[in-house]
Every structure is written in structure tokens, then in C-alpha cells.
Image (cartoon, rainbow, N blue to C red; front, side, top):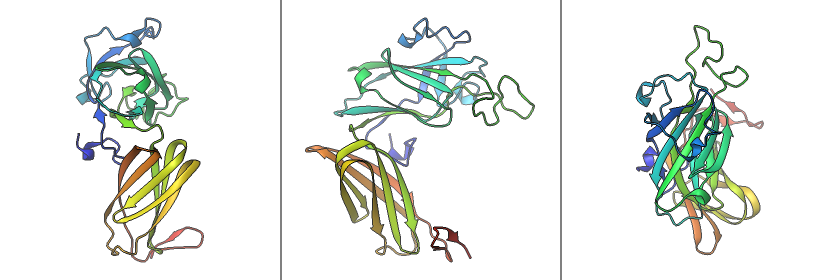
Length: 279
């Protein structure tokens, strides 16, 4: 797919497979699915369109009052020569368990944050089956926003359950970029980049910003901060592309692309306490 369609545009990799679209779907109002091994495959004719939760018009399913629902997707494994494969659920409400080919690969609690699992150990050549169980206890003891729970006021919305953001897989190295943060210093015309990795490692991190580049050798560190002098740019800042290359042993490297937009405001300068003053 086009990189611009990547559900997580902040960190883009050259290869990935989107699993959005039609999934098999089954409600489990009596919560019997675990005991009956539904994670080995769902016996259902119902379908749902991910990433739309039941009740959303585009999902194809009506609102569900069940506290447990199941999803299943069959997909062909890409021919990726990679150390690891990462599965990401953009968000799922609320408690989530994920199986690949009958193997439990991850669990998560929280309906607003991504679910990430490593799954290569559970995958096989050719066809693979992914089954996801989602449980929403309908209690006010968990974050609900404006969703109704075991009680519902006229201002509350119907409760959401299940997958409600995109699902995808991507090849990664054993040690890979997890997140990046930026700090733009307008007064000093500089940009600092904080790169967080999946684990501590010995290796090299190289960050390229346009024609400028900086690199650092890691020794059992899980993050690195690099700085760039932007004096070569005009004050009319625009969009920049950042490329990150990580290398942990001879012949092995992974590249991550990130795009950011810098904006400066006239009359804004950095104070000694790190605050920003606007005029």
C-alpha cells in the first residue's frame, strides 16, 4: 500500500500488510468462547468491516450488547526475509487477547492505546489465521469517555466494543525503532531527535535530515538523542523527511522513515525555564 495510507504515518517502514476489511465476527454473550476453544477458529457466517466497531454504519453489524465479541481473519503470509514480524492493532476496546494459528501471541488492556505483538514464531508459510477476543465489562471503573456502561444517561453514547482502528503487520529487526520525539528550538535554529528502540543493544543509529546526518554507536542503551543545526534552511520552515537506519551486526539493517513539519511563530523565543513567550 501507499506509504501515505499507513495507519501510523509518524513511523513508516518500506513494507507492511494492512489487514483491514472483512473479518469473521461472532458475539459471545455468555463468555463461553475460551472454554470452547474459539481461538482455533470461529463457526460463524457473520462478517464485520474492520476498522469499524459493531454499531457503526460502515461496520455492517448492528450495535452489540454482548460483553465479549470475537474476530477472525485469514491472510497469506508475505515472503519477508526478516528477524521478526510485528502485529499492531491501532486500538481495540477494552481487554484484548490475540491468537495466531491457535497460539496466544499477546494480551492488552485499554481501549485507547495501540496493541502490539511479535508474531513470527506463531506464523507459518502460506495461509494464517488470526483470532481476536475483545471484552468490555461495561463498568464505570474503567475509562469510558461518553460511552454508556451498566447504567446510561440520556447524554451517553452506546458503548463501543471490539476493533475500532486499523490492523496491520510489518517486518522489523529484533531491535527496531519504537517511537521518535522532536524538539524544535526556533531561537537556536536547531532540531533534536529522540529515538527509542525496542530493547537495549550494541549497534549504530544513523539519523538523516535532508543532506545532514548524525550517528551514534549504542552500547546497551535503549534510546539515543541527536541534534541538527538547521542554519542551512531558510526561516520559511516546511516539511522535512527524517530517515533512521539502525545496524546491529554486519549485513543487517533496518530503515524507518518519518515526516515532520516545523512551524515557527514570529515574536516567539525560548526563555531560560524552557517556557515559550508569544507577543
